[in-house]
Length: 405
Image (cartoon, rainbow, N blue to C red; front, side):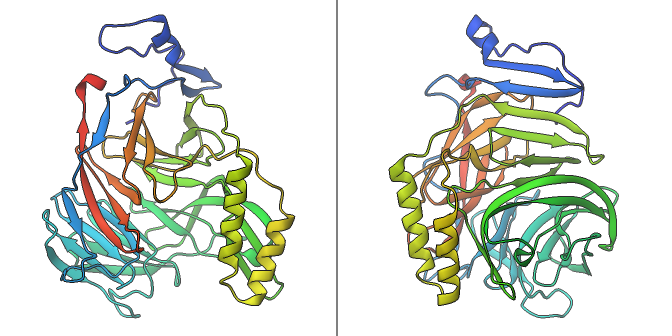
């Protein structure tokens, strides 16, 4: 866990007993009004060393034509449970599926509907203590199951004051309270590239509104407001906001810079972890390619939406630098994994790993089309989308090269 102690000394990043002036400059922790700011200027792992994935998946679930455990997809979440089973939220089938370590299907629970244990839609899967929670964003309902798939209860999340939408859960406290974030309506804002601020709230165990925790700058989106209708899609080179509730604290990153902030539930900023890297300029060819891809996407829409999005795209200011990263997650050992911006679906993605002291260890390349959803001590599990758009759950061994530490 990240310490909440205020650190006023410069921390020297060393490799074994080989301290050097370069190492002293590689990582610093300073105090700013009681907030610890950890800054890395270069990775700790030497080149060619560090963590990496094993060459072949240790688990491959779903997707085969003759595979009886085939997943319909899309997948709303996948994780490894403490007893070794793999849990998958198959949104396409509106079912929770449990698999053995070898990928064998063990059981399936749930279906589309309004009854107990049924859902209209699966939008998020959370492991909350001794339970599993599924968010149905279409109804703002949360369904709670045991780790063995026994339905427990269902309740509806309330909307905070001045919000038109119910909270979307991101975690549960040990007290039984829930923590969630507000949404926004595209009909309440003018057309253009928009970036709203959303709120983080606590709610009671029954979904009732609790107290306000923090305001967070949201991600960018391309919005068309047609008066009686509204539509939203991705903005070119959009900055995305990631929010996690982990180990009792709130973790937030906007992608504007290589920075992840840790907050207490009081709203107090505890620590800011940063990589000292300059923004990457967007080349003319990269911008043209993204804009052409957007226009091709709009061409598949109905006339009203196509005309609206095309107009807004042409009128919007052109971005000049790329976001620092797209998203981040925290692994079972409290390390931060940050997805660097810039890899296309046909290229490997690179994830920067930050340890519990805030040091940048190095980068781990992940296979093309693979999005991690759960990182354990010796495994990276996630969703792989093949070239045909078929989703599968895949796990790779995580090899930690001790000479790279």
